[in-house]
Length: 323
Ligand code: P6P
Image (tube, rainbow, N blue to C red; front, side, top):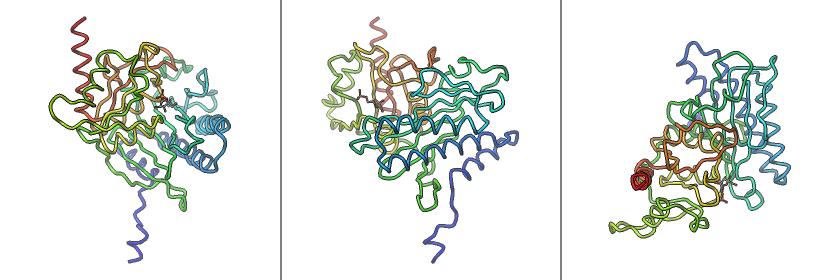
């Protein structure tokens, strides 16, 4: 019975990624090394968050840890961080084939009240071996090889997709390892929750207004949806992924492109949602088809259960027809 108590078949993140990698005989293990450095950064941030470091320091500290870990991995050529105005171009001696975009501590303004926050990241392969340029990272989200987030809450949860579905891992502090706890996550096809900052309602456009109205006062006699909004994207998206429903950060009159950043908030979460059987839409197009022109540009985003996002797509399409 001891074996049952101590599950001996520990599916760690590293083992999972090595299994994935074995599907690509030509791969040289670079991706595994890259990911292990992202995981290292997340373990550091998890400890620092739990130590109760003050927010300002944590923002800078987390960013430094990720930049240093990624550069020293020798597998990256360009990095884009929410914390850095300019992209980081890795020096020749340490250059590798991957571009990494990340928000080292998204939602950090919530840290002092104990709300879950997180790291969000996306990984692109850079084909040309010349000097890296911004074009290498201004790719549509559909080109991402992998994306994920690490949520720092009551436990530390790492959610990852390498393009073959979505898996969730929980940090076992006694082992210092992320262990597979949520294999093959699939988002419910339809949900009972909508997640949006209703405080912006006066500035929403017609389709968003109509959609939220429908959630609150359904005309078809169905029950209204529940509103759950934490104001920390990783927490709101994680709940949406596991319970279903829709997360919205729409455009509004004050911010025509919404608030969330394309490269390291919209794309990684949209990638995960599609891999989990959901979808992600900008109000104009499939989110992953968007081609960013600036590394910190924003986009409206509607993501979550397939059927729920389909409803809002219909409303925007009708608006488009009106011209
Ligand atoms: P609002 C946190 O500041 C953040 O970037 C995301 O984590 C979160 O989803 C959003 O902004 C919340 O924005 O305008 O509703 O406070």
